[in-house]
Length: 151
Image (cartoon, rainbow, N blue to C red; front, top):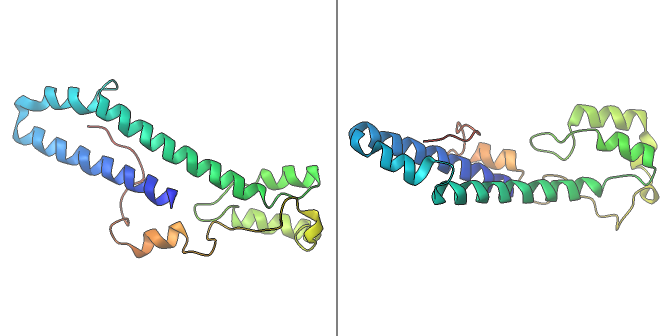
C-alpha cells in the first residue's frame, strides 16, 4: 500500500507541475510568483511535499526490510548471502538470484528450525494483490512515470 501511495504522490507532483506550467504559459506574468510559492526549495508547499514523500518512502523501506528479515536463516553466512539479494519491483527478493541461492542451498528453506522468529512468512504479495498487479490493473497508474518533477 505504501508503494501505491508513494507512486500516487509522485503522479500528483507531476500533474501539479504540468498544471502550473500550463498556467505559466497562459499567464507569463505570474511565473515568478508561482515559482516562489511552490517550486523554490524553501517554499512551504515544496517542503511539505518533499517531507511527505520522504516519510512515505522511508516507512515503505522499513516495512520491506522487516519482511525480508523474517526470511533470514540463523546461519550468519547464509543470512549475509540472502541479504545481498536485492528486492525486485514486486517481490522481497529478486527472483532469479533467489532461485540460484535456493539451488545452491536447498536445505535452507526446508527446515523451519533454520529460521529465526515466529515462523510467519510473508512475501511482497502477502494475502493481497501485489503492488505491481494493482498498478497494472488500475489504468490511472499505468504509463505514469515514477520520477519526481519540478515546476
